[in-house]
Every structure is written in C-alpha cells, then in structure tokens.
Amino acid sequence: MKKVTIFAFTLIGVLSLQAQTFPNKEWSYQQDPDLDGWNTNKSKKFHRYLTDSTYITGFLVIHKGKIVFEYGDTYENSYIASCRKSVLALLMGKYVDDGKIDLNKNLDELGMEDVNTLLPVEKKATIKDLISSRSGIYIKGSNKGDYSEYSPKRGTKEPGKFWLYNNWDFNVSGAIFEQETGKNIYDEVQSQLAETLEMEHWNRQLQKKYGDERVSKFPAYHMWFSTRDMARIGLLMLRDGKWKSKQVISESWIKEVLKERTSYQEINHNVPIHENLDTDFAYGYMWWLWKNVEDKRLENGYSALGALGQSITVFPKIDVVIAFKTKSTYGRFNSLQAQVGVLKKAVRIYERTN
Image (cartoon, rainbow, N blue to C red):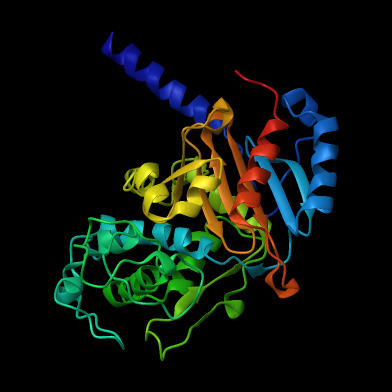
C-alpha cells in the first residue's frame, strides 16, 4: 500500500509539473482567450481605457503561463522604480539559505555608517528590519520616492516596532547584500534571473546606481527591464520560485518574502494616504500584499509597485501575472490609486470563478 501511495503522489507531482507552462526565449500567446474565461469585448474596452485614461506604456496579462492580453510596447527596457526592491528580495534568498546573509545581524555588527551619523538605537536595526521597512531609522535616502514626510523624530522608535517606507532602508539593504555576498547586484540579476529565466531583453550595460551621496552615501540600485521580462519574474513567484524543472529561488524563501510583517491597519495608520486606495495592503519583505479584497479573484495577491506606474503583480487564485510599466522619460505618472484601479479592471476581464 505504501508503494502505491508513493507512486500516486509522484504521478500527481509529475502531472502538475507538466500542466505548468513556461515561456522559452519568447512568450507564447493563448490563441483563444475566450475559451479560457477571458471576455474579448471587455479586453477591447480595457485596451481603450489604458489608452484614454492612463499613461501606461506597456501592459501584459499572463494566464497559465501564456499571454492573454497585451498593450503598448512590452519589449523596451525602461526604469522600473521601486520594483527594484522586490527584485532584491528574490536575490537575497540564495544567500540567506546558505548562511552568507544573516537576517538577524544588526548595523553595528555590519559596520554600517552614513553621512548622518547613526544613533546607538539605530545601529540595533537588523537586516530583517530593513527589508521589512521597520528599521526605526528616519534618515533621508540618496533618492526620492518614499514616505519620509511621515517620519517620526529620529531615535523615538525602536527597530522592528514601527513601519515606514523609507528609501534609506532599501538602499542600505542593497549595500549590505553586496558586502555580505561579495557579489554585484546587477551581476546577480543576470546570473540568478536573466539567464535562468531566459529573459528576452535584459541588458547588463543599462543598469546603474545613482543618488545624491551628499545626503546618504548609499546610492539606489536602479534597474531597467522590459514588461515581458518583468512578467517572467512574476511567473517565477507564482510558481513558488521554480522555473521549468529548476528551483531558482527556494520555495521556503518565497514564503518568507510573502509572509506578512506589517498589517494593513498599521500601514493605513502610519501613512494615511493609503486609506484612500480602496484596497488594503500589508507588507512582507519588500513586496506588497493584497488584503481584505471583495473580489475573490484578488485573494492572496501580491505586488511589486513603483513610482510613475510600474508593477509586477501576481494573483495566485486565478493563475495570473500582470506586469506593466510607464516609461519615465515621458515625464508622466500614474498615481498609486490609478495603478491599483488598473489591476482590478484587468482582473475583471476574467469571468471564470472556479
């Protein structure tokens, strides 16, 4: 009986793997999305909506590993803003697993210091505190694009006790990653993700760090991706870190990244503008977690979100990845509220509830 049971579970695992579709060098299209639950008429209306009511320049919906909706230029590499932080979260997994990165190490042990000298209480912040936005350090980062205007007074919050989305935390996390691993972030994107996921448009030469190092000596590790390659990252997440037959990021690390570290109630309280989003977000390790959703299709969703209008979003309930970008050189932006609204509208095209 035991042998039969083992065989049955093995067979189920093999069939499950076979049922999962991954792109090769190019994405495949679902030839008849209507048959798979996607309403063609709604797709056409959504396409018009993106054109008339947003500044989004590239948009993809992936269902069961294939493209079911495409808008704009999905091939061009452009700036992905804060989605870079979610990419770093994935890169860290390999080195947390092998012990090179100890999430419980604090800034004092790591020898971290900045232009604005750290207070003794701030030096107690751990890597775990930094990547969950709970460091208690309210120093401005070398780049803008955070919630630093809501910062408490320095030294008033113990590390781990208060959430605030601050670029200083994320930029220092990048520096710590390179210090502890001896690896360059962009080289790791290339080896861990771009090559393994067979990214179509990754260009190592485009990637560069910058920031005002008079404000903080830790520059931002900015990244440039195509919408199509962002979607590959989303599909990797959806498949629990597996790409085809290879476990690229450990499943246990994916679960850690997506574990709630900060409740939506705390986020809404600490940053009141989140109360106006019509969607509640909790926070994990540099990924946003969808909460309190009325639409069951959005259950257990999670997102990488970036300024101007960039996103990698996964809705596991319906086996969907959505990636979109807004090209920064045009000088236009979509508000966070608009980005969330676009994601909800895209999901409503899918009409199958089972």
